[in-house]
Length: 633
Image 1 (cartoon, rainbow, N blue to C red):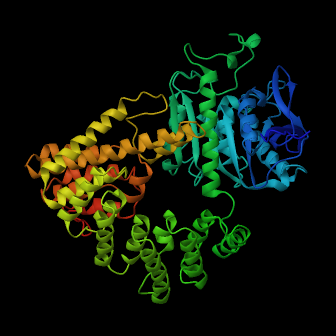
Image 2 (cartoon, rainbow, N blue to C red):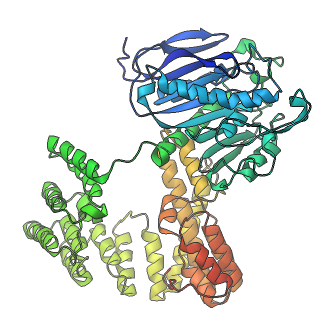
Image 3 (tube, rainbow, N blue to C red):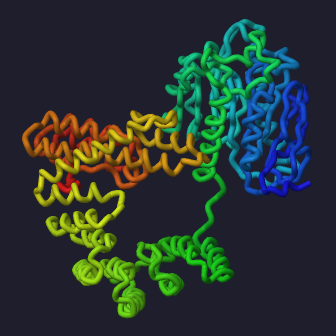
């Protein structure tokens, strides 16, 4: 029976895999997305709503292998597996022979440490060969491991473990040969047991693998030292996203136990006093899901080549020629260098312009051409804009579109078009904003335009910053001070918002990615994104502006403090893409405040991944102002 509501359920099937090395048969449970209706089924003492042997829904699906802890059961991860399957992943729950709840005969042995990674490799092989799910899987496997399952994940991803003397019949420990699998391209480590990787270089071959790690600060089994093994052992710590969960214990990452099984005699059913496992797990599941989706964007299915993408998008456009939104991805595809002068690009730009000249797309670089490299195309599009401007002289959006287009040829022409339009629409804030942006070489005029945009009600999120920058260039330090204080007040207002998902002291781009994972799917996701993003920008620019005023007044200590604080922000997209302001850093270089500027640049490397940073740090440490810096920042 197909689920008429359209929601995905979790399909389920058992497969058995022979491990000829161990001489054992391994049970692997596959869960996957399906449109068929699920029903409750008992798996030992645990219940799960699944559709047995149902048809799979979707293609190009990611395989996620889950490895349980020592003496455990894969069903302690049932809620995570169900969540992922309903969300479009194929999950393989591995039951490790000789180290699960029903047969724990190999616990605490070196042979078990060698068996476990091989079990995972065999499970991956079996999933790809499975008649239901195999054909729908993409290359690249994610691995989730709890406790000894975390060891298993690190081992198969390239880790070289060493056993202890008590784990071998000979009483001699040492490096173990384990199977590695290059198909494993991402790890989720939950309270991982890592003591077998303490040898120098044990994790050096776990490279290029993003890792999400969650540990509990009240874990009495895998304490903080085991997390440090991962943090210190990886060749690239920037690929590690580690959060210590306040109040969590070793088993707080497992599905909650039925009420009649919650007992001190069953340690996995227990949490430290005050920790709410039921409240935490949905947040964890959302983090893991977002992490895996991010993996699909970074290392997932091979990207479509531009020519293939253009052909597909043109076919889709022919099926719906009046769908203006289809031009956005199509014109984006034509931005590939080999297609930017393709004659089809001109025809699509003209078609989009004729379909809706007020659409924001036609005011972006996607619909612009270089007048010097493609003069004929430029002239053809300009003629279309001029005809529209003549037909609709009072239409501010068309005036803005024409001005933005001709600015590629002549800034003065663009300014004249905007000023002419403002005589007919003096309260149009978009015209004032665009006029200000085109007057960068005339700071007083730029400042006046931005002030007028604010007066008539512009909600442009960067407008206050633009006013502050224009005021600084125009020499109006009182206005710079006022803008800095205004932004500082907005920072305080934001920090007054109490939300357990937001850490107002967080810094760096990894903190931003972590937040996005935490709020993935939340109904207020957009509000949180804007709140935290604006807070970061306001904090950076408030310190920048107040520091510029302090430097101008001779208070170099205060200016240096502001500079350092301006980089202590979360790495949200605007700062990560465009980088921080260098205006205050430039001013303090000229004032020979080299240590403060070096500290600032090093902090910037956590929010802005840009090649010149290392060279700039070298210049500043040598007491030189980097050549590319300007007072405008």
